[in-house]
Length: 169
Image (cartoon, rainbow, N blue to C red; front, side, top):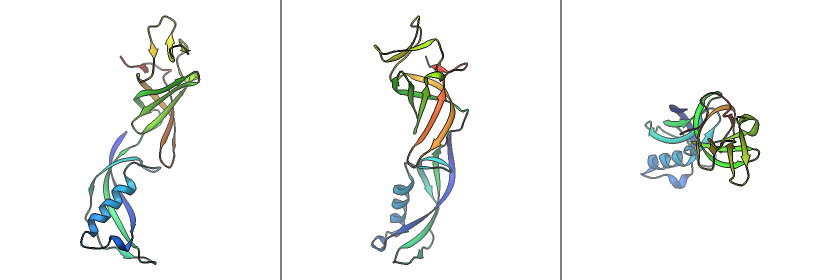
């Protein structure tokens, strides 16, 4: 789910960033370019806690300079069949939409136990005896059944139709 990874990236800096604080400008450019983004190879990059010493850049055509920067990153990387805790952010008759860290997970109605039915009056999924009610902002446990990495987000589909999945008390 969460990993500390060693990564590397080439950054292009415009000549107006050159000066006695050049390495600080490279750091700022790296933070701006990678933090809060999705890389389909590693997942969602949350934070860059450490940057290796920055070497010499290579002048490119047009005056830009390319720096190869090695850094550590805290990444969020979900996997298929992983069981995770989530917060319900949207409910309707089609299913549930949940937030798991930086990922949105949709649970289609066929992946919700058959004893739960959608109640449009209270906008929740309820059991007939009302012993269980999944409402907005409820905490649930789900299993990820599929993933898609987009340019800026991670989307997943999941299920709560298994043992020990569903509402968290």
